[in-house]
Structures are given as C-alpha cells and as structure tokens.
Amino acid sequence: MVSNFSKGIILVSGHVKSGKSKFAEKMLANKNDVTYLATGILNDGTKSWENRIIKHRKSRPFTWKTIESTNIISVIAKINSNGTLLIDSIGGFVNAYLELSEENWIILLQDTIKAIQSFDGLVVLVAEEVGWGVCPPTIIGNLFIDRLGSTINKVDSIAKQSWLVIHGRAINLTQNSVPI
Image 1 (cartoon, one colour):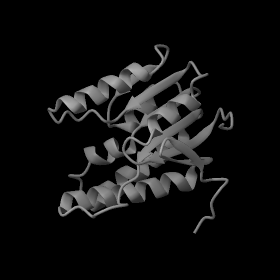
Image 2: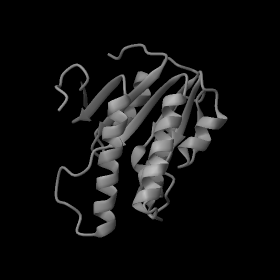
Image 3: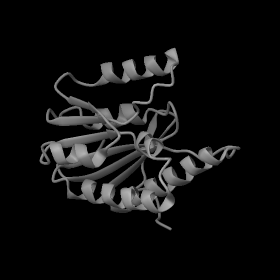
C-alpha cells in the first residue's frame, strides 16, 4: 500500500468525508510511537462537530499520544523527533490563524514548514481539498481557501509522497502525476 518510510513527510489530502484521516491512520497502523496532533479543536457548538471529534478520537490506537493544538511549532519542539507525527489537519491550522495579516501569516507558515522539515522522524499531514466547487461569497471564506491551497502546495513540494483520497480510494500522486 504505502512505502515503509521511517523519515520524511507524507501528504494525504482529500475532500470532506473522503477517508483521508482513515487512510493516514491506516498507513501508520503498525507504528507505536505516534503523536497525533489534532488541530480541529474548534467547537462550533453543534452536536455533529462533537460527534465527529469523538469518532476521530475512538479511531486512534490507544498506544498513540494525542495532542489537541493548532501550534504545530510548539508541539514539534516538545515531542520525540525520532518518532512519528500525524497532523490532522492542515485546515485546522490555517483556520486558527486567519486573523493574521498576510505578512505575519507568511512568516508563521515559513516557520511552521521549517519546523516540520526539522523533524527527524516521519510526519504525515492530512489536508482538506477545497475550492473544487463554488467559491465562498465571504472574504474570510476566500482567505481560508487561498491560504489552505498555498499551504498544501508548499507541503507537497517538500513531501516524499503525496496522496489524494477521493471516494474512499487513495491515489499516489507522486507516482501517478506530472508536476506542473
């Protein structure tokens, strides 16, 4: 299914309910030293969001350590850098910093990418694919899809492997695509 990397960066992206988190977890199922960084900690007050978070928590092996935070840099500085880090998801990270000016966002993103690259073990990043449909009619919605899209492109440029999950199927983009 997936190369048995012990180091480097793997990107897994897909639309909502595509199976991207499940695929990322499955590719790490045989690893015990996994830190699961959950960035989707926003509570919108709905039962459906709460149920989604509970379902994600239950899907993880009990041997994995879970951290809920949007500060990727801080988490990387505190954990075993020879282990495995699963970040789910880039969208939660982007959402947490939408209030930053463009200049401050670029600095934070560059620093976060450097922190990810400095991690000695394996990093698997899960990302939401957005912008395949109607563009949001709000400034904040467009800012989110623009920042998320550019962040995914930056992560993909440093990843050993890039996967797209769609319709419950994973496509290895590294092997089955042509960079543009």
